[in-house]
Amino acid sequence: MSGAHGSTVTRLYVAGNSRIHCISPEVKLVAVFAVVVVGAVTPRTEVAAFSVYVVAAWIVVAMSGIGFARYLRRLSVIVPFVLFALVIPFISGGESVNVAGIALSIDGLWAMWNVLVKAGLGATMSIVLSSTTPVADLLHGLTRLRVPRLLVAIISFMLRYIDVLVEQLGRMRRSMVARGHDPRWLWQVKPIASSAGALFVRSYERGERVHQAMLARGYTGVMPTMASQRAPLNEWVVVMVYPAVCLGVLMLAVV
Amino acid sequence: MPSSSIEVRDLRYRYPGEHHDALTGLSLSVSAGERVAVLGPNGSGKTTFVMHLNGLLSMQSGEIAIGDTSVTEDHLREIRRRVGAVFQDADDQLFMTTVREDVAFGPANLGVTGDELNALVEQTLARVGASGYADRNPHHLSGGEKRRVAIATVLSMNPDVLILDEPTSGLDPAGRRELIDLLAGLDQTQLIVTHDLPLALQLCGRSVIVSGGQVVADGATAELLADEALLAQHRLELPLGFDPSRL
Image 1 (cartoon, chains in turn green, yellow):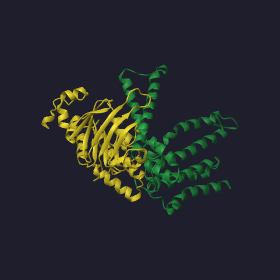
Image 2 (cartoon, rainbow over the protein chains, first blue to last red):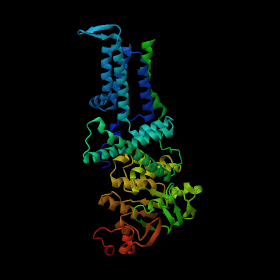
Image 3 (tube, rainbow over the protein chains, first blue to last red):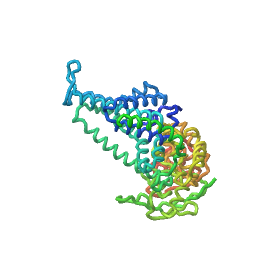
């Protein structure tokens, strides 16, 4: 049943040709990374600076044309962090304020805000990046940023085979269920553990076969270059305006 | 169109830690441009044999030559360009994240780059009837499409010899027929390892039966398939109702 199902990784990409889609992947990677770093180092009390970051990020989301509904759905990955953050004001110590009769720690409220805004900003940037850049292009971007080719190859193989692995796992689970296995309790976990072992062995064997297929096509230990041309300088300049503005806001705020 | 002969003499091989030889003196000679089916039961040494042809298994004893180049460590690079191996599981063959990169992998290793590489990819995909697949993820292709793209990944290296391990396994009837049409249109010397006896009859004028690590029968496919006793002795069976003399 290969190929029939949507893949876990590649379905993040939303086809389009917005201005964000058209940015070269290496430029996008650097810009996203820079914005996230600026956000992360901004002191949590600089609310004005964060407001600018968030509005700017939303403008980028709007420009990418991925749709706000989809953006919010994908943003839901940070829900666990949000839940954790919401607990902090109740459990931290220090000075507190009374809100509707409940004492909330002021320090805790700041910590909550810090987690929420930074996680939100980081997730927004990742969503824009993954929704507007095909996985293969991201890998090319990493290569052009001089990330070691071996590392890029490892990431690429992981992305290529994760779906194959998930399918294998699904087949093994179905075959267990078909023979009456219906785990409900912890002590019934053994077949799952042993199937994980089997999966490991199968993946290892596949790794060997893939390596042979690579050797058969002239692989000598170095991944060949296939990345096309680099981004032009003016593209870098235009796109870097975005992190530069964020950095400028940060400077204005803290100086 | 290039094609090379294959000369194999007295090939012996034992897997590390095993107590018997997987190949026990296998000899075979195939002329340039010939298409030969390699038949035989599971575990007879067929795959072990073909993995020697491009040096994936290094020879312990015997000799192999592709054209006038012997398969040795010194010539591995050239041998691997000239001998294209298509493996049984296309998921092993297609290891990159797009079809384009997979088809480009071989020629890129040979130093082809830029526009020349792109043109080569498009041209090769067109040859296997997979134009327009370049930017797709191999995982999303059907079984037949995967198999044709897998063949494209070696055709892009412009090989003289094609080795195909079970090319039709797991394909639906239409996918199988399309694959047969594709192979019939290629001029390279072809060695097709298969359990699909009708395929052997349709594509290959000549077949060899490998059993117990050596060639035990070598002749016209129609004659071999008509010899019921021979087939039965080597665990080969024609599909029910299939009469090779009436094709």
